[in-house]
Length: 229
Image 1: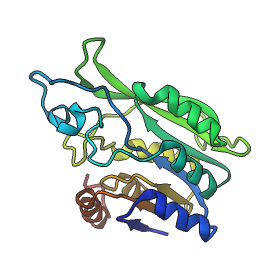
Image 2 (image 1 turned 90 degrees about the vertical axis):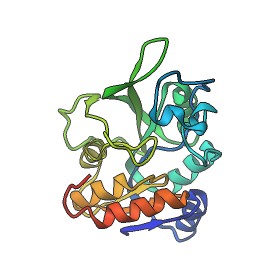
Image 3 (image 1 turned 90 degrees about the horizontal axis):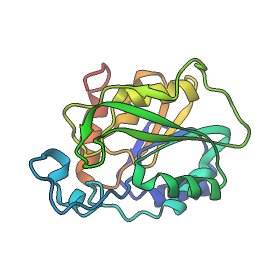
Image 4 (image 1 turned 180 degrees about the horizontal axis):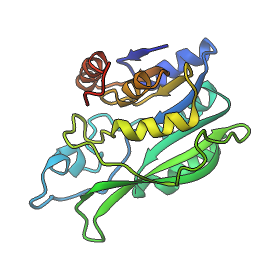
């Protein structure tokens, strides 16, 4: 509990499976493909990154097998518990298929409505999808009055190309876990989930392959006694 790993998610998940170690909730924003772009015109930020232009979503490491990590996540998640997986329009349909094939039952697809846009010739993108699913029997969320469209401002100064706001992760973990539960993010990035867990008395396990992002996550977690980020 309350540990982060600078390692390959598949290897750590295999170790958890071998030790029959289970978690109460999974929230993750895995690396996924984006539309290839020849150039981004006058657009800056992540759209100028070579890994984004090539359709890698801004990630240097983007070759993880989705069905493989979903299968392992299914094994480490306790029965009758929830999983949230973030994705974009390009990957939504395949991810829905893969989630079902690996044994999860889908509740619905939530929409995160951001306060910023990504340039697009066919309506500028101002939202992302969060697939909300379960393992085993259905369990209601803690706040049944929450709506399926989450209006939460995006992170302004990003340390990672797909960094999500702490408030977004807090919304999900408060609805699908209780104090002292263990929450897993196999693609931790710069440590948003561990910070959200520390803020709300949850335990966490985070995994991040990229050395640079892992070091940033370490520092952010150490400084997160108060909501500094």
